Length: 302
Image (cartoon, rainbow, N blue to C red):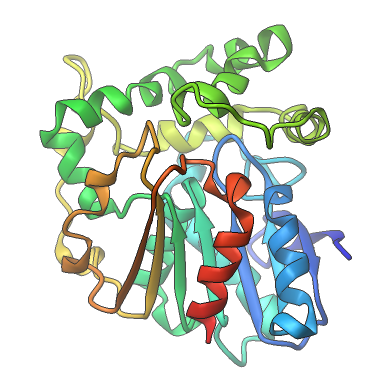
């Protein structure tokens, strides 16, 4: 059974959370991406909180700027250090500060936060599981050098426009539905996107979209343009990119925005890597093949 609550954190941010399982049990934290919300993890929360599947305490926060979580107006409030701070504080609450997470599980923008979290706070989680979210090292490489990746990521330069929120909201969020059916899925069928699920998305989006767009505005990891060097002006030392804990990566190989080239060379940054490439799956593999995600994650947690 899913519970919902508002978790106030010591640094003044409140995260709206969805959770299942008994407090005090080993904790799994799940981080969503854009343009989604914590509800996308409900099936996994219920599965892994079941005693037959580990009996974990499973928590999925809405990241800052999403749903009922705090949504600072300033773009600078969405820099990685603040997003990581939110999750570190949530982990301290859920674990009592006495033990690490069993695993941090993340997709899309949640994965961007999780890569940074695992690099900066490896002592706070035993394992990391990433689903179709590029490692910053490989993503930076491709944004700098690969024209196809620059074109696939061109939507980022739309999302940083000052009028992006209005354009995304117009006509019952018409452009956002295209993110789910076109930009990331390549116009493939999306039978998982039922009317009931659409209503869950509307409920998240109705709280405002500026926070979600601010993730893109605050990050230079986007395609360069003549008036904006973006990724071309960024260099990251390997010390900021290395992941020292066991890491699972599951990658839908038909992701239209984040193609498989982004997992090439991943072992350079992640020495203890378990990689599963999934054919006939898109960016939305969590929705398309939840049983497969459950299976890979179950095996990894063992």
